[in-house]
Length: 209
Image 1 (cartoon, rainbow, N blue to C red):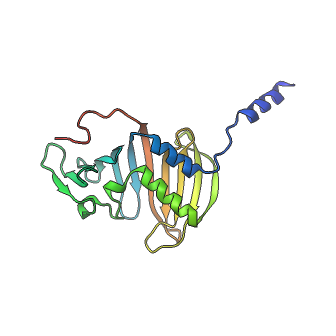
Image 2 (cartoon, rainbow, N blue to C red; image 1 turned 135 degrees about the vertical axis):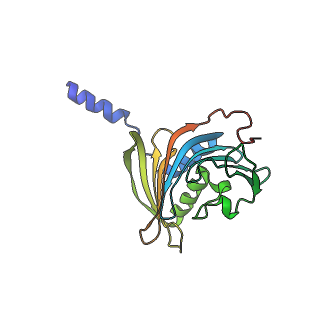
Image 3 (tube, rainbow, N blue to C red; image 1 turned 90 degrees about the vertical axis):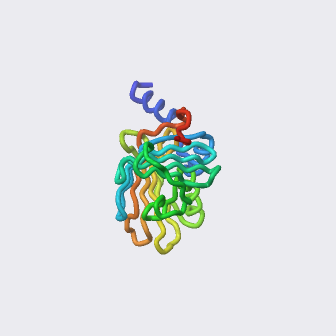
């Protein structure tokens, strides 16, 4: 066998087959995690956000805002079912608020207590059950191999009817998510960067004094 044919044979036999259910695989990987942290950037007609995001089971969330309200810190505790907000940084007084309070929800109604990747994956999986997935292919994003897919769901006023996701090919963690309405208007683009899976969080990280 010539060197060229040998190379082709090795390439064909070593190529990992596409997972036919990438969203289920992504959710299964998420459910095996104890936590994660990353840098999140979002853009949309309602405004842009840039923050440091951290999550730990059974639902602890911390957001350190970089913009537009630089210095603000939000921490959600599932034990108290409240969001503790430091509007001007941890050295200033804090206030406890309900997760649906306007001060701690985004313009699109996103809540701190329902902001983790698992919530997103379950939502898109549910949409897939009654919709369709016309696009599933291999792609690259920010220099990383990814699985790219588009999920279309039923129409709903003010709701996302189309999700476009890029899942990291190794960890199956989302790297980018684009949501659009039934008319094709882009609602939000989210980039998840500098991802750390199962990091060791400092003491009191989710319970700052």
